[in-house]
Image (tube, rainbow, N blue to C red):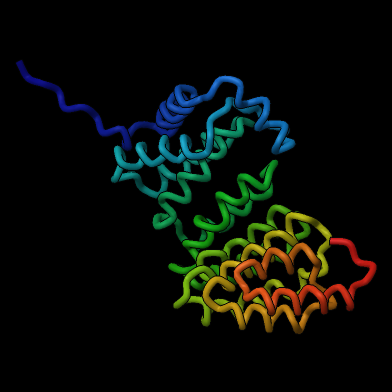
Length: 261
């Protein structure tokens, strides 16, 4: 009797692969979780109640089983998972892009931008931008032009994506000196943006740099205290020496006596 060789799953159509991933998500759902998460995220999407660590496990196992996944299949599969307005399905789409960001090409920044524009929550921006777009920036430095354009977009999720695309670069001690001037150019005009998720993103990115270049981050903020929000400042200086933190916070309060964060 001749045994048939199973067809590699990575060669199956994207809709079939998407259905397999959705089935794995359903199996990982935690009873009673969906309603609370939906309320926490103020999400208009449907939720089935799968924790992020479990989603990461689903995607990680999928990628282990499909080491030969190619770019076209990755993009098709991402579209299939993103199409339904289901939080966990869209999260898995973003996690696939994060897990195989090495397959993405310069032209794919347009695809990522469209996903950001369709995001209903910061939770998906924060999966797409830091390790998806961020990995592209380190591998394809020319994408900096695209991420600068994102940062100038009035859509808050696209703008947040542009900011967070620098997270990996600023987090890396060796890459920081090269990418911080670029980030400074990107972030400086955004300091007066009044939206919480933009201000928070700037502070988060600066905080990553402050973990290994605290003096440089503190000096950058010191020169901009009249324009930086309290939220951005407090977020950015978490790793900075306590004495410098107090100095910056006091100076900020004196310069902005009536400003609310």
